[in-house]
Length: 300
Length: 270
Image 1 (cartoon, rainbow over the protein chains, first blue to last red):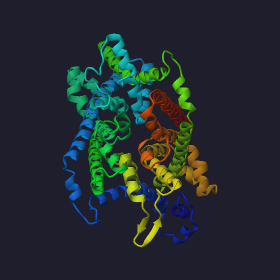
Image 2 (cartoon, rainbow over the protein chains, first blue to last red):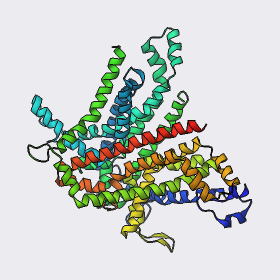
Image 3 (cartoon, chains in turn cyan, blue):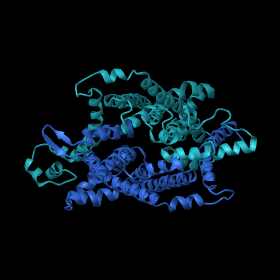
Image 4 (spheres, rainbow over the protein chains, first blue to last red):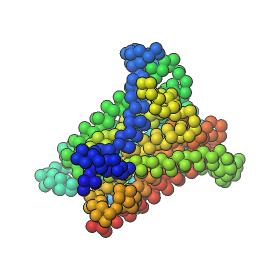
């Protein structure tokens, strides 16, 4: 047992046995911590320190202050808008679908295939997704052509454009609402039948049950998952880049341009933009964890 | 029909249409590469391109190595936490969730800032710039992929370890004279087959079409190739998008069967 307590799991080391009595079990986690330090924590920290360094290598707050520049604020606003819009619409749509799958008499074959499809769609992002939407809803896309040829309605004559805020939102929704479905289904299944029966015995109507019992219990899960969707869209680069090129100035697209060549004419400002992005992601994950804890109080 | 069933079917149909129509659109579009002919010409042309095979092979190799590295890194770690250091579980879990906070674009930004010059600690050079050679850039790419897959892989392995009795298995193996290597590769990993397979398939699905890391590290992967192809071709990218979708689909179906088998096995063993 002494040996078991001391030898690391990855590399058994005879040296370790000499330090009997010293708690050395943590050495077994060394490979993991070194990896995390080198490829996750230090790279992020280097952006952090870069945000507070000027071109001469001195400490400065100027980069952070420069984040208030109009084009940068616009980029953050655009990224936040598209993330909020797709999180709310995807969240509501996904919730109704999860509700339909769990609570109503949808045939089980249909249910299984839709859930599998959601699993695929929530992992189907990036370049292939963007191109599928171009082929379907682009100017010469299939759905565009069908609508024009059958009912004579050219969506591009009526202001639709796939390479716009609306088009990118529609594309993001393709992976947003399936994720909501997948996360909400277990939460809805966690609503106990007894709660409904108890409320009915006390004379509650269906609407009252939802208003006073089910929705308050589900609200933390719903909000929490919507925050997850927000982060999902906020950090996305590949889908937006493949679909719109540089036409929509999202934060992630601007950071990409900054990596390619110093378009902001200040490397420090680029790092500050990246740092700002991490701060927003971190805040949303904190909110998510807090809501998740509240959700677990009732749903287990 | 009950009113609730009607609304249930309404939402489910809407969802099915949203999921299906763009794919059907892309598929139909990809069949019209030749004027007035419905056929697979765009697929033949896409597959005839040597660059497709070169980049697709490269991405598969990167996915394969990333899977091996993440299994070798995560299984011993999760095992050790479970067996010896349960009080460190929150720390390790926190680290495995960090990739959700740090998007790929930020990760690669940090890699380029940190590793495009030699890593120095005072006067000491620990290693030269990693972006200098193809091989060391591949190391960065794989490390990045391991990071992107970390939350999924760790959760998958951790769930798998919770389902087996790690302590009893370890002690039984030790009392029969097994060393750590034997315990890890002949006891723990075979018992985690389902968890490892589903983690591996998910990693594969994330890595094979990945664009951000591969583009900015300048590696000839499938994601950047597809993105470039989309700049000057119309039908081939649609065809390859359908192929990518089918691959993701295949990975998910396999995960479904693999994990379903594991549940049956777990209950069978009890």
